[in-house]
Image 1 (tube, helix red, strand yellow):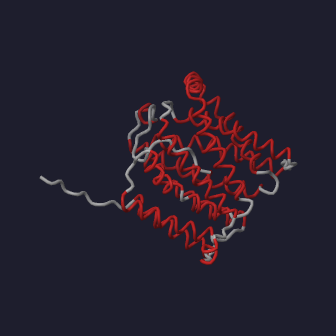
Image 2 (cartoon, rainbow, N blue to C red):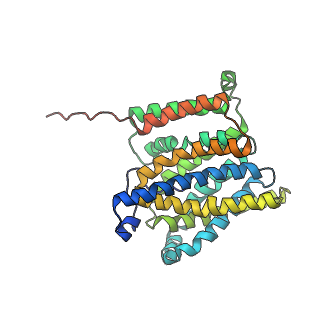
Length: 328
């Protein structure tokens, strides 16, 4: 599961960066920031593996609720100096906090866990790589950010890759609109993450990154609770055996609280743009871990779809049009 991308690519973190507080040089900051970012996305990839591993034993919304609740509880004491600002923000904009947390944390994670019941972790990791391209498209309509020719072509290429994966490379399935339910849940999760990213940029909550993450985690847990209670009402209960407890401990600790902390550290030292570009390491890590720990292998349609998605990412984020000279 991806960490919380607050800043717009190219935008510097809001306040209180590590380099400004410690007086460290940009070179030293980059040296400490890159390992933090790589470890962050490795731990995030582990979330897919743990969730896939425990899927037969824990229902998706129960897993979502307990992960968000425990991660929030772990991080809450760490941001104790910001409790006043957090309470003030809740009083002023509680509905916005709940809405954004519901979209980006409750729905996004719940859909991933639901989809992992029916698809491979490696396939889910590839589909989630679509979310930055989806974010660019949504930012065009919600924030009025320019899209441009190359970003548009990149979005179309990435969309083509997603369709190849969802249809399992079967052209007739595309014509019949017959898709795998598991992959569709993951596509829905990627869309929720993209929408969440745009909404956070638009909201400009005005507090530091980690305290905001804690508030959103709490809001996401609150919204996930009714879904979990519905599972219990329908007798979809967690096994809570040794494997389930171990997976939940990872999801809340190393794959939850620590992952969010490391992401904030990488944003503060590298800047939002460079830190966000390293997100694509997550897809690689998911494929490697799924092969080593779950015995999964990539299908032909995964590789073809991934090639289209990578091409789309390159077109949307790397290729730039040349500057048009002004007329006199």
